[in-house]
Length: 202
Image 1 (cartoon, helix red, strand yellow):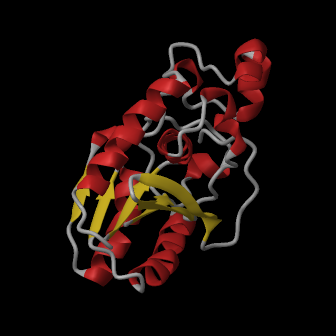
Image 2 (cartoon, one colour):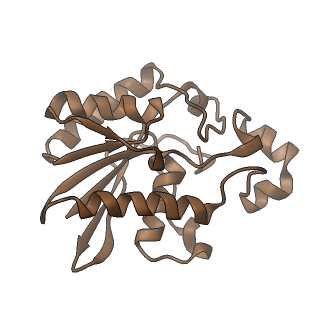
């Protein structure tokens, strides 16, 4: 079975390099176009299931694929982005200036620790996988840090190596495959032309 882990399209806050976290920011026009284009590619994979974070930028991205496949989108709050605490809404420059130590350790004050996000998202991914028939494929629409950390957990990576997987560009995806209860990374950051990303938790 395979999981296609698809990051949402661009938002205004992405373009402004603001930390979004669980702030509910919708897709902008560019993000909507990205979702439509990527959905045409993903529809060719004939997914059996589409699951999405309940935040509007992810749900809006998933809707583009649902229109092409006829599948309903199942939303799950466990797929939400990492909560960014006091960083949410701040630009990368503001975070560096106001929280230099926390930025160096990528530890947002009052935010969600990386290990907690990895457990939350990784657990959700396992639930979806366990509900698939052998050979099935699910498209999971979520957020950059949430997907990277969830993947890291499924792949058995220790916390100190979570940063080994690079960020996902807007509307790009990674593919995980499971065989005999072992997960492997088949593709990473595939599908669309990457845009510059300065932070992997947006």
